[in-house]
Length: 432
Image 1 (tube, helix red, strand yellow):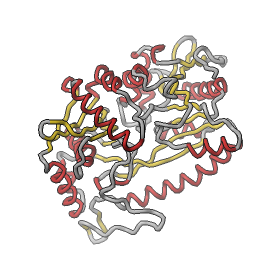
Image 2: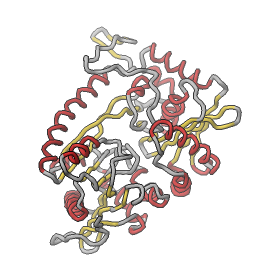
Image 3: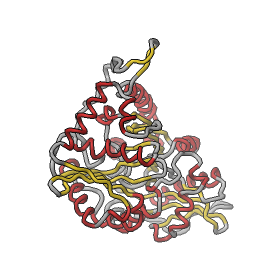
Image 4: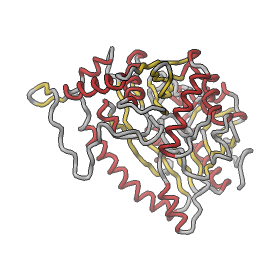
């Protein structure tokens, strides 16, 4: 398969390069783009840890991201007169695993029709369903010029590698709008996030809920710790290799039972600790002086991001305590605006996590496949918007009506095509 690691076609003013790994760009230069005012202008997060050189290079240096795993780095860089204008984290993919925006149906249909869907270009943070910037603009660069150059570079790379398509996933809405204006097909999905409405403590959050829901959450937290289980928060230098050994055992055990081979290897977690330990929160549960479960979170400046969890003992409600309630406790203590608890679904609703829209954009070379996908996405966007509206009526928060406060108001019925989520649904994978 032909690669494009060197210079690519030039416009009169811009040069586009494909970088075969972060070793070809220094951490300071990459992070200057990732955290520049121009990149951050469209969102509320001043430090998204997942687009940092430290996180992305840990994936590469550990071998989690490589040709062997089907994630070949080909990061796109745009330069003018030797000065970098922007970069994009990009990978040449030979499958659709580890993305959380599912296009398997598109691939199957295209290949049944005689096409070759793989390779494809994936603009994302591997194995990470977290919204963040995807077009990283250098400080002082013109965002419109840099974005246009990066889009042109991605399309040139798609042609050079004979990829079928470009997929930009978990992007911010402003970037999604710009991608749509550039001719990308637009897609939406949903997640569940907890919002901090100025709570000083967990009980303040509970006070915002209907009384029945308050009682349920208090009971879940009590029952989760009833068998003599205690919980620790570990970050920075407090995280040792022994903690990582224990967590990795949880992660691999849960991942292999739920969804096959886990994506992350043991070395990745050591590199993460070496390079950005102050951005890592481990929530570890212990019983009889032995760790039995844990969850890894990354800490942004405005949000806490729950990523993976695992356990070697099953206890009622322990997953909810370790992944959701402890995350809320930490976010309140740190004054963070929200908790993003990963890609899994509707069981989060009863724990105070609200539905929010996710955005992705897709550029497909074959006109026939593009038309078919465009038609599908139009219908899917309408369905997702309807689902978010319905689910938002099922949150546990107190409501008011024309008569004033109404604690535990009756919930509107969901439409017949929707299923009310179970409050005890187990997680489907090692995602939190």
